[in-house]
Image (cartoon, rainbow, N blue to C red):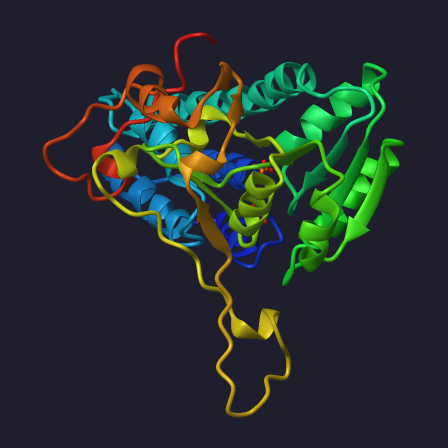
Length: 323
Ligand code: RI2
């Protein structure tokens, strides 16, 4: 029996009560840990049970690659041989804790590395709500740098409000703008800083819908466009030619009640080509989008495969050897 707490975490991810690519990944690792701890069957069935839990978690939201990467990392422990259920459960708990600790440390390092790129007096535009972005801005502010942030509302779910509130509560000078005000504000901006749900092997960024328009505008006004992303946001599946699935959410998030006779679409993410990205700030350093392939192969340890992997089970994510 899959514990209710695990089903609740899956529902919370699906309904976006738990959201943000990093948080989703940590919640999935936590759910696998809870599932393992409450297992009361025999050793033979343990792996099957854990696969079932993984499937439930994987089915929640399709775009942020941090989710399958986190699951892949924990499930690697499930697939080893054990002498007892206790041993197997301990290994899963260890792997889940490792992922969570790595993820939290990565956010801190991104804050440290990224804050060096923030200068006094800058005007910075951000979109949606990214913990990696907040980590950078909060660190720079703590170091005494003084700058101004424009946060977009981020229709239709308004996650920009979360960012604006968070930054303002830290004393950071914050202005909220509508998504359509970006081009108007861009003329005065020095930097765009956004998070990531996935980075493809060719260095494209998959992030909250509207990101690519902002990148396009930044390019026109020659404003640098930076991405803050932990390495587990890099997608090994794209290495094998898989496209990142763009989540289409309920149209009622856009308009409720709908207008009769009008179709409403609600894509949650879009793709920004690598040519529009000046730098990707990761926990292992600042890289160009062209280096995404090296992060996937050299750092995460994925091989270029002759056959496309069908999901996380054929692909094992490492966390890199540094930590
Ligand atoms: P962190 C969010 O997606 C946004 O697109 C944000 O840029 C990205 O996750 C990364 O967030 P959603 O879950 O991992 O709000 O940096 O759809 O927090």
